[in-house]
Image (spheres, rainbow, N blue to C red):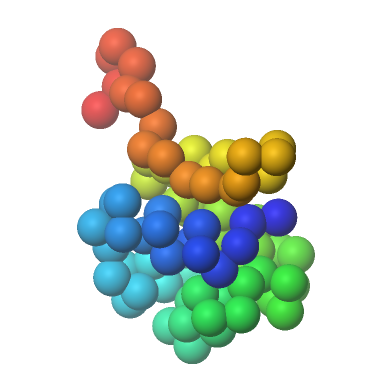
Length: 82
């Protein structure tokens, strides 16, 4: 499960405003704001999945907690991709 900090970092990497993420994900702006403040734990599983999928489709990868800390990075563009 991604954290509030990962959501904010991913959005910054993509240079998206909260309203951009809301429009792209189909979630309301207040839902995005709540997730960025409190994390996805207080949202439905469907909304959390939709948010993560939207950010990943935008070009980021979420790095799971593995002892070195959870994180987010830009996905490497492969040949033939955008």
